[in-house]
Image 1 (cartoon, helix red, strand yellow):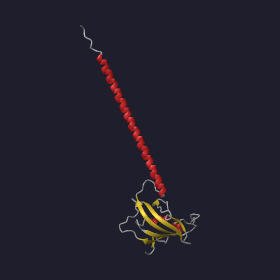
Image 2 (tube, helix red, strand yellow):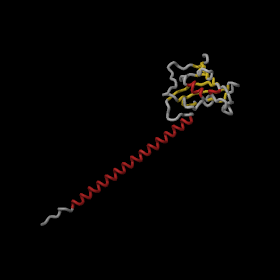
Image 3 (cartoon, rainbow, N blue to C red):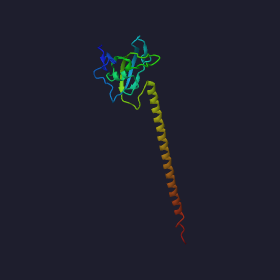
Length: 190
């Protein structure tokens, strides 16, 4: 769709727009640092796919700027808008470097990603690495809320029991006073 844009000035991260986003689409920002993407990663050397989210149709979620992904992704995703698809070419120093990421990515590999920015959203506590982690986090949150609700209910029940006990003590004292008053001054001399 367009020429490659050199995002780093040294040819380390090149971005070519495959599909433009709508003009009013949002971009990642300090307020919206968590991104959801679909992607396919290819080794430039032999065009072998080494990773993809397309097979299972799940999104990959991460927070920009935390070091949870390769540098080229942090750089490139900040320039994208929701709905945009881009081809990102990453030199080794902006990807996995000399070490690679065995067994799929050899040392000093140039990588090509086709990335679609699906969504960007606010941070929710810690960064979320995957959909399954997000589901687990939501389940934990649900359990915590249930525990808090149960504790609140127990506290309410204890307060009601304490009120009932206090009311019973007061009533017993009132009854005792009434009982003491019945015997006094009732007998009359004839």
